[in-house]
Image (cartoon, rainbow, N blue to C red; front, side, top):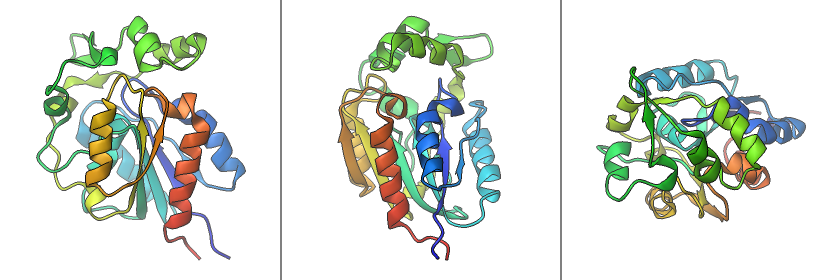
Length: 233
């Protein structure tokens, strides 16, 4: 009997592992072993270290899925990707070598979701509730979006300046969900990420947090990836 690959879900900035709840429930019902850890959002190296801790716990092939800044984390695994057999990006950053998030976002005006970042005295950037509800999670029920805002994990500003090394997608098959109404990461940037990594791409009419507002589409892409990669026997 062929075993299903493990699924590791990587949340992005201003979110936490609970943002994957609807997707986790369905994956578990379908028999997948799922892990959705919390990431510190302090430095990219810290976030990658947390991901490596989780990957070391996986018994067998693993599909890693990253949302938003979580795409930066999975990309930064580079060429050292034990157990990883595929990468799934959900409206995520898929940078190439030598690129940074800050430089990319600086090519145009601030996106509506990120236009008013509130940076605290420790250098962590928070999203104001109004921007979170009306732009970051615009197609989520406002009551739920406010809860998401309350549990947001801020991102340290240094992460925006981190320069990518050799990206993991150069040596692993990739899948990409483009959120065509995204108000955080421009959809055209997402399309460019997906095209240059040669990703199998789905485009969904959703805002930034697709795994909350369109969990069925996210689930389908993850399962498509899981069914395409080598699994344990």
